[in-house]
Length: 292
Ligand code: KIV
Image (tube, rainbow, N blue to C red; front, side, top):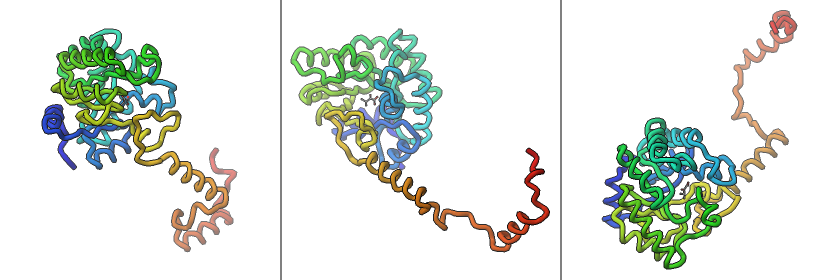
């Protein structure tokens, strides 16, 4: 098992041109196996709300839900850099609220950093969290918590003017003290320009190959979420299909009594079976006096 990476390691990786592999995780088993595979960082994303809890958007997700899942991820991956995602309305109200909830992630779930959505308008929240001694990853481009304002889950920065706005957001987030920046659904040319103009690592999801690292949502890449699949997803497995096949076989086995088999049973020694039968039919067993 490798040594847990730090903020400084990610900055060195950017300088050395070594790409960062980043994935979401919401539970103990996926965190355990991601660490075993050597993932550089894990995000307990508020996508939890959609891909695990079944909400239609990320908006209903609460701090309590995020903390429960972040704690499980930490237990599964004790040696991996873990980032907790601040859910909607856990930092938008004020810098004080942002510091309070970032602190909860640190104290209760032992995360290594937190992530929040927004560029210039969230710079004061980022600064306040960093000044309190915590590390922040920014999130710009398509920001699902404000997808209503963006006109839905749409790619951002597809005109020169809007791309320039994203560059200004990137600069503000870097200046506010963020250690890295996640970019969602932007053209690769914009991802390249931002990656080249910032000293902090850029992590892309649908932001092209030039970013310093890539992030995917675990349920998308494993084929375990069917409601919709964004263009930027590459599927590495089809767990949905595997699950339906396994569940169908299990149903058939139960109904046809093919399960359980001999190997799944806890047998008594033959002499105990005989003794049990004698007791069951003898005078010692009086079900009417069982005491309830
Ligand atoms: O919540 C999340 O999973 C995210 C993704 C864009 C990585 O922020």
